[in-house]
Image (cartoon, rainbow, N blue to C red; front, top):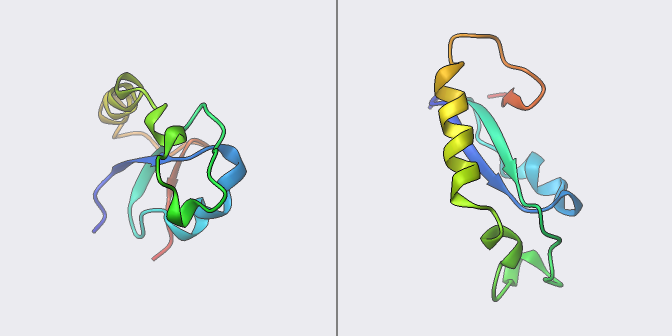
Length: 83
């Protein structure tokens, strides 16, 4: 544990999931979906178009940014989950 992580999250409307499904005991940066969720129940979503809308380039950019700034304190977009 404790490994810095890039996390993919669905859209803002599913904010509650960020509390339940964030990395524990590790600093992380979140990449949120730009697309609204179309599922009626995210636990049984047949095709998660909101997550598919996250471009791989955004994830790679977040990882590069994380690596370039790994020695500075965490900001608002980067968090450390409690253990």
